[in-house]
Length: 200
Length: 256
Image (cartoon, rainbow over the protein chains, first blue to last red):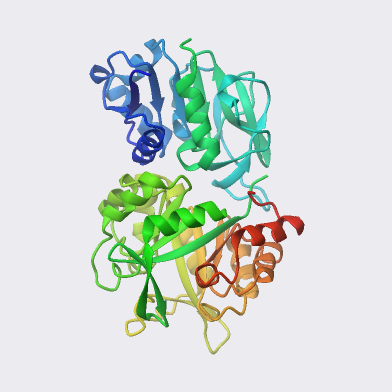
């Protein structure tokens, strides 16, 4: 494995993702702007926070263009996954547009708390190397108030009132709405699977 | 379906886990990381670290132990105690904590909740509420509860504060029912139900867990999202694997 670039999009979970990779024996390179991106073998876009601020930061640092032009596997985590899509209802902001679809707010319903916070089950929708070793109904840790609807790119769904995309994959583009860095063995397995993906 | 969370709480002082008897005479329980991993292995869904030295002594959290925990632990954790501004919260979150919990500083300056939510998103912002039933039967909050000599009653009704905290950006409420805290006679179900009725964000019960049945009641009757406990876990009175087995058998969704 050559380099893993970990994008600093201003999210507070940057450190946690770095530590999770280090637990797997991978020391990522923290990348703050497009000039620092270089030619990594893998790119991880973590994110905690709000979509408008994160997109503004990516644009200011030229990373929106750089991430679109990449040809290596890219994993978006939580907000980082949402940013891969066209738009987000959060601040009605235009996102990276690498995947079709719009991120929507999880609407509170009676007995249904928002943000969706805690461990929820993953329901695989198709076979994919990203899901290797992750059993159906495995629990992963989620914290989010917005979600991606289940579309053709959805690899595993989860339910909170309605079904939403817990994992997505289209070619080199991968995403996890949950936090692999905080999802114990399931999270470590996803990161290992991502690092082991054949370059698209 | 979203699981109900079991959350052990560890008191931290000077980088060690301690156990207090009636807020005093703290006994060293061991290394933070070691104990955190032990609870993780037992099946804890999340941990809360309460820096009991930080708040009463008016200093902020020492982030070195936060970073040590974050490097090793692969389940979420929250840091409470001594966080009274955005800068300190940022240090704690960047050190690897998933959430920060504020209590007295939020009562003193409620705008703090909105500042934290604006800076980090509501999902990082937990508001801890210490509540006591007064002689007139009303539940009201207490502040400065970390030090019995400094505890104050600002006169604010608990239900009003829970509403206000959410409106300002609290992403989770931890309700610590002080009447039952540490006495292991069960969570204060009536109070939890009353707060649940006004709480749209996740609600965590705290104070009073003594038996497995107490957890069942908190989830089933008060419909809380998580149950926090300290002494029953530390003393081994309630073992998390056995607790989760019972909860699952009772039809309560848990992570196993």
